[in-house]
Amino acid sequence: MLVPTPPAIVVDNLVKVYKTTRAVDGISFSLPVGSITGLLGGNGAGKTTTIAMILGLVMPTSGTAKVLGAEMPWQRYQVLHRMNFESPYVDMPHRLTVRQNLKVFGKLYAVEDLPGRIRLIAEQLDLTDFLDRPTGKLSAGQKTRVALAKALINQPDVLLLDEPTASLDPDTADWVRTRLEQYRLERGATVLLASHNMAEVERLCERVIMMKQGRIEDDDTPQRLLDRYGRATLEEVFLDIARGRGEAAREAAQ
Amino acid sequence: MSTVSTSAMTLAPHRIGAMVLRYVYLLRSSWSRVLELIYWPAVQLFVWGFLQLYIAQNASFFARAGGMFIAAVLMWDILFRGQLGFSVSFLEEMWARNLGNLMISPLRPIEFVSALMVMSLIRLAVGVLPVTLIAIIFFGFNLYSLGFALAAFFLNLILTSWSVGIVISGVVLRNGMGAESLAWTAMFVLMPLTCVYYPVSVLPGWLQTIAWALPPTYVFEGMRALILDHQFRADLMIMAFALNVAYFAAAVLVFLQLLNSARRIGSLLQSGE
Image (cartoon, rainbow over all chains, first blue to last red; front, side, top):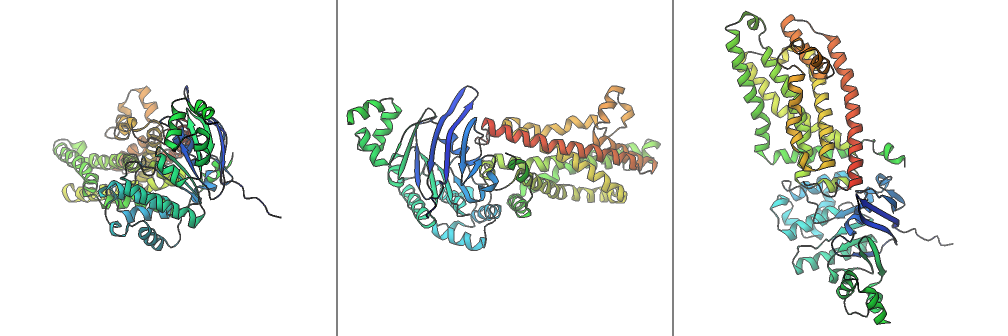
C-alpha cells in the first residue's frame, strides 16, 4: 500500500496581531514536498510575517505553522538544519570574505566536507573568483549570489525566499531564477517564494497564493488564476485583487 | 511545547566554534578593532599609575599601599572590558544585519551566549594582557604576583561582566539598536557602587546595603585586603561567587524571556533601530 507523503509545510488558521494590527488574519494552506509556490501581495499584505512565522522568527498569536512535521517555533530545532532562507533584507557580514562567511554558516549547519561543498556551490553560483573578497565589497548581484550560496549551503529540503531578486538587474535576476529552478529539480526541495515580481512568480511557481491585508484572497495555479480573472498576466490579476475589484473581474470572466 | 526548553539548552561545540571563528575573522580583518581593545585600558593605566606615583611620594599610607590604584584599574578593566567584549560581539551581528541569518540557523541561544563569552575572553586577553605588561614596565606592579587570589578575582569579575552583557544583549534584541547605548554605559552605574577605588565603609549605610548585593564589591574589598593587609579573604570570594551564580542564572533566564518577547513582537525581523 502506498503511504502518502505528508506536506512539507502546513499552515493552519495562522494569525499574527501586532498591538492592534492583524498582520496575518487566519490563513491556511499546505505545500506538498517538492512544490514551488509564490506568495503574492502588496506591501503590508502579510507575506513577510507569514514567512517569518514559518521560519520560527515570529511567534503566531494563534494557529499553527508546521514544517516537515515540526511546529514552529516550538519544535524548530528539529528542522532548522533542513531549512534555509534568503532575503535582501538580511545581510551577510560585510567584513568577512565570501569563503569565511560560507565556512561559518557551513559549520553552523554541520555541513559535511565543507571545503568541497564551498567549492561546488561557488562553481554553481559563479562565485569562485570572489571567494576571497570581502562580502561588503561585492556588487548587489554578487551579494545576492553569496546570500543564495548561504541559503543553499546545507542543501535545504525547505527553502524560503523573500523577494530573492529585488534590486537586481533583469539579467542577474533571470540567472538567479534559473539556479533556483535547477536546485529545486535536483534536490526535490519545497520552495516558498514571496515576491512583488509577477513575471518571476509566473515563470517559477506552479501555484500562487494571493494575499491582501493578512488574508488569502485566492490560491491556485497561475493559469487557472488567469482564466478565473479573465486576464493575460498575473500582474493584472494582482491589480484586480489589490484594488478590490477581484470579485468583479471573476464575475466578468464567467 | 516542552521541546523548546530542552533542545534550546543543548550545546554543540561545533556551532559555538563556528561563531567564535566568525568573530575572530572579524577581529583579524580590522586593525582598528584590535587597537581599540588596547587603547582605553592603556590610557586608564597611565592616568592612575602616575597619580599613584605622585601620591605615594607624598603620603605614607599610599606608599604602603603600593599598586592599589593600579590593581583597581586593571580589575575594573577586567569587569568593564569583559562586558564590552561580550556586548560588542553581539552588536556586531546587529550592525551587520546578520541576526536573522543566525536565528534561522540551528544555533541555540545558549550556544550563541557561550560563543559571546569565549569572545569576551579573547578580546579581554588582547586588550588587558599588554596593559598588565605595561604596568610591570612603567610602575613595577606585577598583577600576576597576586597568584591564586588573582584567579578568584578574575573568575568573579568575568562572571559579573557576562551577566550584565547577557541582559544588555537581550534588551537590544528585544528593543532594537535604540538600546545600544546601554552596552557602553551600563557598567559605569556599577563603578561608584562597587567601590573600585575606595572601601565600602566610605558609602552611607543604605548605599552599603546595595553595594554588598553586587559581586564586584567583594572583589575590590578583597583586593584591598590583599594589598594593604596581605590577607586573602576567601569568605569574600565565596560570597561573590554565590551571588554571581545566582545573577548569571537570572541573566540567562532574562535573556531567554527577552528573546521570546522579541519573537512575539517581531523584532528579530528588523534588527535595526
